[in-house]
Length: 254
Image: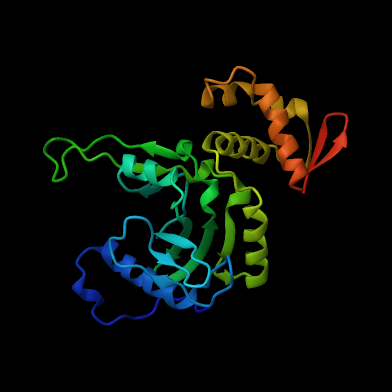
């Protein structure tokens, strides 16, 4: 995998820096990236301004969106119109997300977020544009990248180094085991996994997770038995092989 953007003829015809990086990053991605779901060597570029995604795999049919940023990713990523983005996230056609970080013409990081790690809580509505703006009334959105569990961020390139393709595909296959169609249950699972991320040691107790009860209650105000929900999600993660139950209310991250 070549981790340097190519020199493209005609790039100077694009006046906007964001347009130029979009063309560069999509060209690089089309020629260098494989499908992490099935291993197909090339992904197909969808027509510009496609509403749902940027690329698809002709072999397995998985679809992907690519977002690029010339600085550290940080807590959030710009996304499109809020209500359209919300509808997409809750649909069966929501794409997997690739997040590319570059510096000048060098690829620094490329991370894959499988589509089932997205929930409505991941989206944050932005303030509508003022009446005098060119797109007056437009309401954009942010993807709260920091709210996505670490297990849902699969490194493909890290610190300008391509990671082993087989490992990437295995990590994707493991993450697929957490796929849940029900959006409410998915939201609970993602929030519990994020709480587990905040516990820095590998072995933790049920009481340590109960410490997040107030935070979880704020995120799920309609649920009146948060501790039972915590135990339910821990059992799910244990059954899927992501946690080991050690007895006595203690769990180990795997």
